[in-house]
Image 1 (cartoon, rainbow, N blue to C red):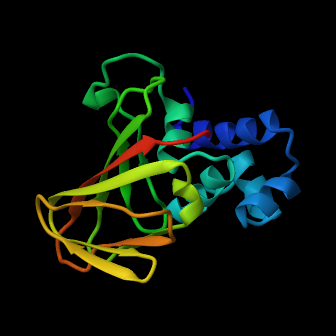
Image 2 (cartoon, helix red, strand yellow; image 1 turned 135 degrees about the vertical axis):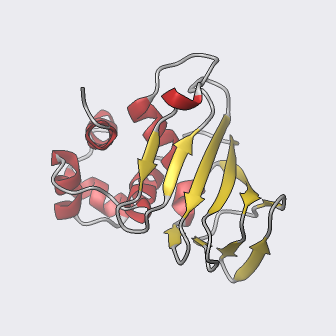
Length: 187
């Protein structure tokens, strides 16, 4: 059975091929080097969260949607033990796709961000989506463009128009938060 990393690599190649893009075209759309894309597609390198978000954004998808397409089958029930989990090799960020894959416009993702970690996400990863961040445990410093929000347990922030952002845990304990994404346009 393929690992999630292998399925993500295959999915990136498939998304590129169904669009009829060469490696160079995907590099131009995403800002990720052709060499790195080639390594990711071959499974020689695991993408970081930032790279995966840039690739997903080039496809008009969120990182969540790209990973879900790699992992999940359709259905109305998403049991915890079957939910795809992905760990960023750079930051240790652990991402769990909670919502079932369906034709509904909503994605629900749970994230565990280790202490001292930051994960930058480009604006393109959120094009055509409304987004909320809801902190379940810990403190999250969320940088949205030029604005910084410090969110504690139970706080929920609706994000504005897509901007480059950074999810940052400056605390000494893991921060667990949910990202809720609602599609608003074509992907």
